[in-house]
Length: 636
Picture 1 (cartoon, rainbow, N blue to C red):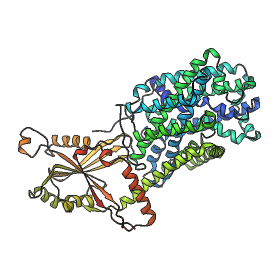
Picture 2: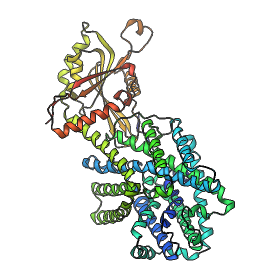
Picture 3: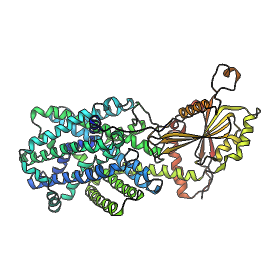
Picture 4: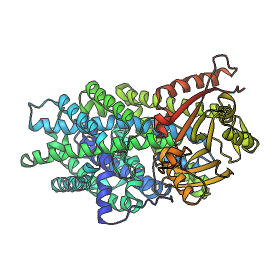
């Protein structure tokens, strides 16, 4: 068992894959950004539109290109990106930063609720323009239901076509933009940042419009989160093409609005309205496909965030399924069901893309702020010069705080919904993380060598009923020469457990995403072993398979005999049985503890009862598992 190498080759295929995976969210922004900017004002004057598009161009340049593509992507964890991967790089030195990471992860997950809803409903509204008899809400819900229902079967087969479809989509965006730019060439003045500055200084509602402008860069965080799937060079190079087509499309929409002001009426989306009639059907179909791909990317991203949070002890243990052999592809039923219900509720509640635009963008702004804070801590941890890290961090904090303030007006228009979701998710993360910390302080350890003679005697005592041939305990003792008192209590005091071989297994979730290795320490030849397994936070946990494979390799080296000790079975070369014991620490009703810590622990245990059991999390055969409860020690 060796470390897993995780490299994404740079090349044409890698670039196409990146276009299909990374840019779904940011690539569908043209569907609703200009509609949100024109909004209730219906202002189609050249100065207003050029200023607004200048804000879009420079937001994409500063926020997406400079912050994420040029700077943040370099802060990767063995090729993996995302806010939790960034936290993994600094958590050994700055454990308190889990609060920042948890806030960022919670708001990013909350954004994953509204983004699929607004993207799909906008595309369906475009279809409604061609087929007026088609109901918008039922069709949107139908598409979302199909998307969520196919998740258990794996989407690797679907993902193979994403790159090609999105390549056509972005090409279409660019061509659509170019054809309308010629109608009003002066629109290219938007490249001059002075127009953005003038817009913000002179337009009365400019700060409110800034909230709509921000929608053009909401997908920037996905560039970082999907780094491990696509690779730095593929994202960096493909962004040149993607950004070009996006800007061309925004310029084209702006030119169309300026040249046809009479068509800017309520309910008209400039993106679909500027399409020629003969092209509308194809354009709407492509928009729908792009919306589905963007939604799929966000669903997969939510699975990844939760998986990483579980590995870092920030989220309760829940069942994770791996429906395909593709590394990193997973399915989490609880998350899938939660997203499905919340997305449908969003559609039913807001009823239109226009209403959703009024609520969209608030939570992801907070995610970006948290990423900037973690990035500054990362600069500090890696000894980057202050003359570089401080101005950069302050600049992006200023920009993102401005966007946050601009988006605050959305709170009353529905933005509170995503903040409530994010708040609940953060509370769960906070309780779980701190509950585990408090619980771990209640653990007492003993030097294991002091108990080796007792365990050896128990193994030889035929007066004690045999519990198993191989008895396995999963320990949380970090140091090989220590063992939890509760495990020793289980073996010796609670019910003496006689076995031929005792295994104490420690699992360490490494900050290296795909690392896997193990070491073996022998306390008693052929009798008592300690195995330390190191597993990357991106890998699933398969303890049963790990132990059997490691034991087999040890047998080949002559370190252990796996054969059955029963003559009737050993005669037929049948291996001995393995039995796992999971020892749970429970909180006694009358245990003395400070009120706050007790409250956290009570909520933690409630969450634990509702979450997946350790047996399932460790991927153990439940027929070979014994679960025992022991009382927790007191803590002051």
